[in-house]
Image 1 (cartoon, rainbow, N blue to C red):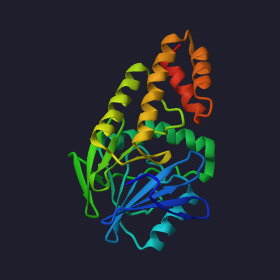
Image 2 (image 1 turned 135 degrees about the horizontal axis):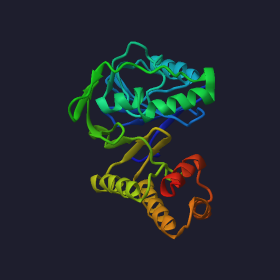
Image 3 (image 1 turned 60 degrees about the vertical axis):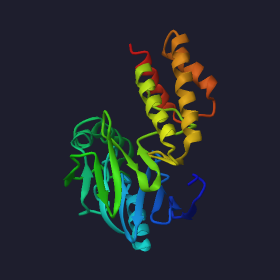
Length: 266
């Protein structure tokens, strides 16, 4: 499956790219919200599950309407890094690891929710769902689709063998990422090289349309360049300027600012 092998449906605000695998379908909902969220629904024989939450009320209504129009019976929501938006499909079972539950309710995820609530006000659904089904092992099956649960420092990634796809929080081949120093960059590179070794077709992330292994290599190159530029920079300001010169078209300057803070902590 190529990342371009989809049909697209435009909605009032967002759009949905549908990847048809024969036995299953992937519905990739691009919210076009203020933080460029992406939400995924996996469908098999009329049953399905959702990966992550939409967190703005207009997107919540739009995605609920789309799912209803498609006749997909959602059996669960898998919540890893994004837990705001509890009004979405209220009453649906929620699956997460204990670590992700903590991240969303009290950790870094909760801090982000608080920041977004202050920034976006009533448009943002700050309610956090209760995790009804704690994922204890390394596998989960919903709607007849098996997933591998890969635990991370904050929450967890999801491998979907039937789609030859993996879900992780961020990739973005032409935007900056939050990189907490050289060691973190090396850890991300190792993870991405695992995707290459596994021959993954699609990399699904919370803030980008589905990407592929060419995009993975682009990100590896970016991270290697980031480390090299940091080693040659004297401070955060010179580091940021050099990165922007090397990647002038990249989006996500706020993420770059955070990276600068990690590489050159005061």
